[in-house]
Image (cartoon, rainbow, N blue to C red; front, side):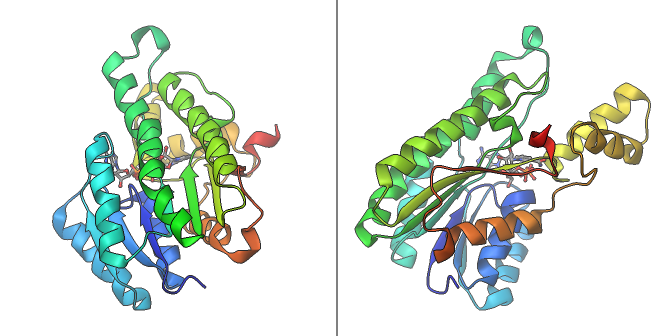
Length: 260
Ligand code: NAD
């Protein structure tokens, strides 16, 4: 479906981003991986993607908190593959603390990586999409882009910001073959959430498995985690011709969280 297109997925060395990269590669898309981690593990993932569907995959270690590195990563992708057709702004971090004790440097890091990097990525990628008359921008927001939970001030603020930015870009690119949407997952069992489960297990005297069930049942009526494969398929749909008229949307994939 996406043969010959190129997608850059930020924060794709782990969790949701890796699931999205795998799903896009399976549709024939060339991939630029990005994120941190063990160099040998990342290289193994890169090679696995190439084997999966005969696509070409590269890796950039650009730090999403550094605007110059974001711009350079996108320029390199365009130079290497000829164009960048799909940008998935997915890299993200979390810090959980009450507002009074929320560390200002954690606030800055979360706003920079979860929100400001999305702006810089879009600013660098959009002109090339306009030239080609085709593009897909997909921003990984969260249910926390639409509702709040306690102790997540920076994360909730950043994700609400991502949804606002998504709408502006959708309007500015409307009618040019380019769509911009946000996806809003609820709990997905990734390393980002595993840390929160560990903290809950400690606070409540539970095992990791007990805390896992306790966490997902608290807000997610389906009582089950969203999977990275399901999110990957949602992204592929948003890249398809069938989704041409979906733009500026915030699509929840949340087991019913936001229906309450
Ligand atoms: P994860 O920790 O598994 O992956 C995060 C990725 O971002 C990794 O590849 C990491 O290396 C990368 N990253 C972090 N800081 C970076 C930086 N400065 N520069 C470049 N890359 C960086 O987390 P995840 O759960 O897969 O989260 C991915 C996205 O999904 C985030 O935006 C997160 O907010 C969002 N999200 C997650 C959940 C969930 O339940 N896991 C739910 C909703 C939204």
